[in-house]
Structure formats: structure tokens, C-alpha cells
Length: 340
Image 1 (cartoon, rainbow, N blue to C red):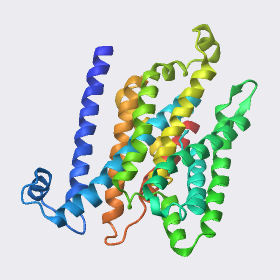
Image 2: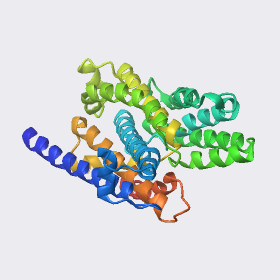
Image 3: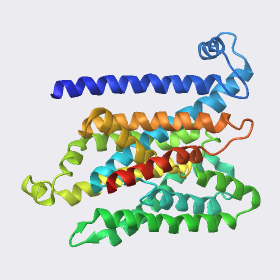
């Protein structure tokens, strides 16, 4: 049985990687300035490289593709962790308010400090994930406080509390952005909607350490996410320090979400859809679910970003809106399914 699961996982994961590479290829070659495969290869191999191709590939398109994949990877894995901890298949960093808390902190950072750090843009970019982490942690603490009942975390209260707190932080972000200068407000409004149009390699550098440290921690503890599906008494019988392990996994997922939000704004529904699709493809074991969640998240964000930048070209729409158009019907479908 396990041998069959391993083969199934390998087939699904390789197929997803091929689709991600195909999405990256389409995004790299298509746009306002179209580039052929030969020109891309020549640019990478430095054969008759031109300044125009260097600018389009290395300064605009490639960092955007890399950011889209990293954000999708982080949000997909964080969504699987939150659903595993809460045993609630409707849990998601956006729905639970963690996205909104991290986003509000970053908007406050942009309002108070962006101007002062304008001469050192790299410093501002590297600090933004820390502010996002503080906001995400604060939101998580509020959610924990109001969702705690009879010595344990109530999954139903968690969902309702997360929606309420997320709405509150969203209102705070909007209020602060309205106090900004007109040019800064436009940037903040697009960013809050979820956008990676201004991606650059500094953004990649700012979020990579978070992903490289926290994702291995989560995968190392993936077996615990399987155990958390059992009743509390069974966990105690197995000698699992449930609340301690939940806290470690929750903090790791908040750190990942905060790093993603700091470079892409609030992109919702990726962490909701990816775990459901992954479980249908590879089963319930988180050893297999987590990598597939990350790959599905990468594919979702990369494809959505391509749609966002090409459908209304030369104008662009935030990638968060494209994903929401897909995610809202999917969320309604899950609600109806869970009710049934």
C-alpha cells in the first residue's frame, strides 16, 4: 500500500513540476514584448545577448515568475498546516485573518517608515517580512485568545474569530492607506489586493531565508499533522505534547505567510484550495500532501499572474483578484459539501 502511495505521489509531483515549467515558459515568452525560445536560450547562454532581452527577462519577467512560485509554495504549505492543526478543511491563512494581520502591519510600515528608508530601499524590503511576522503573530494571538475553550482550541470558534479579526485588520489597512499620499495610496491599494507586478530580486532575497528555514521544520514534523487528526485523548495516550507542537507548526506557518504577504500583498484562497486538491491526488498522509500543496500553490499563482498581466494588456489586474475569482466559487462548493 505504501509502495503504491509513493509511486502515486511521484507521478503527481513530477506532473505538477512539468506544468509549473510550462507555465513559467509561457509567462517568460509571452507579453507586450514577445520573445522566442531561441532568444531566451541565447540570453541565458550569453550568445549575442542584447540589452533589451536582458532587461525584459532578468529585470521584469524572471523575478516575477520566481516570486509567484515562491509565494504559491509558501501559501500552499501554510494552508495545509493550518487545516491539519485545526482539523477544519475551511481553514486558510486569508480566511483566518493571518494574511490581514500581516498585511496591516506592512501597510503601517509603508506609512510610517517607507519615506525615511527610501534611500536604502534594500533595507526597507528586508525589514518588511519582520513587520509582517509581527502583524501575523498579533492576529494569531487574538485568534487563539478568542478561540480557546475548555482548555483547547475550538475549530469552529477559530474560523468565525478569524473571519472577524481579518475584517478588522482589513479595515485598518484601508484606513491607513487612505491617509497616505495619492501616489503611495495607489501602490498600497494594489498591494493589498495582492500583486507581484513590481517584483525584483531583492524581494526574492528577502523571503528565501524564511522559506528555507521554516518549510523543512514543517516537513520534519509532518507526521504530527497526521496524528492531529486523532482525538485529544488518543494524542495524550501517544505521548504527544499537542499544544506545544501545534504552537511550533503554527508559528512556522505564520512566518511563511508573513514573508509571502510582505512581497505579494494579501493573496487569498491558495492555502484553501491547494490542500483539498492535494488530498484528492495523493491521499491524507502529510508527508505527501505538503510537497504537492506547495507545487499546486506554485502552479496556481504562476498561472493567475500570467492571466493578470495578459488579459487586459497593457493594463494589469492584481493577481489576488484572479485567484479570488477562482477561489470564491470553490469556497462556496466546500461549504455546501461540508453541510451535506
